[in-house]
Image (cartoon, rainbow over all chains, first blue to last red):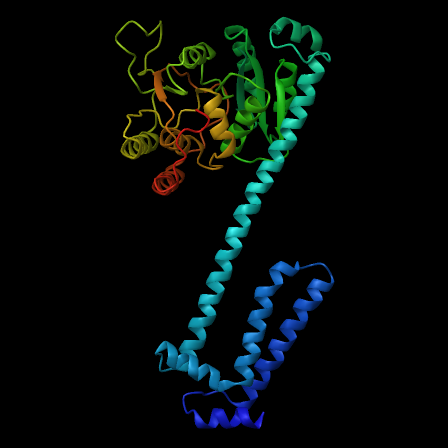
Length: 150
Length: 248
């Protein structure tokens, strides 16, 4: 911890106080625990949890090594580390939202196909019932079908 | 040669039975399937009473999904040709029979009934087949011309009635549409898709009637949104991969 503080002291561009860093670390740890708990209760599937877990780890890393943020800001060519922080978070959330839209679209298509399959199944049953168990009725007339229904 | 006529219906209990009866009278050799798109009313019951097979989607999925259900049924049950028309009584089954003749004669893979295209001058038009007894609203007219322009641009083929829900198709089209059919922008994208896949798409002038029940879902704001969405769909469609010779 003292090493991390030293890094912070050497870098005048990082404005995080110890207080905010402790708070951020606590929130990050709590966040990851919450994700684990959601998985444990089957409220969240593992495959959707990875990205959130990585986000939590990133948050923790930022709190523990404040120099990291300054480094990233430098790499981005941003003078203010806060701007760098918010840009990164914003982009991440944007990417996540898009990811969810993609997943939702795929699931919507799957639900549609499922509904169609069920509808077709029912229709086929009804048609088969009307055909009176005779599957080779390609030439059957409409009146036959009407009589079968009556 | 087996033919399926399917009718997508969403809350059309008032008109669906009459449409089915009319179809059975005008197209005596065809099987009739009603795709009930999650109706809250008696649509499915009325349709079954009228003698149609009913495919009921468990919840409302939109016209595109309903139409796709019909194509899927036609494909799987081995029908040679299929046609669909609206359940609100706007589409006379006699006109559907003319569309089916075109695909049966193998003059086209997909035939669209157009209420705007003037009947051909070579005596092909029958009694009452005129385009100008149809009076669209202004917002519909704007949308129609916008889509007409962009679809013609995209397909390099002249289309007049891009949103027509009266069509006839053969098995090539069934195979294509049962796989890929836009769920919320059915009519326009499907035309673009069919042309891009190298299918022969043809328009035939038809007469349409005033709707017997229900009302158009188009308000000016919705129309604007509809047009905007349609243009995006067409633009994206131009960049979709071609799969030339699909089951040809």
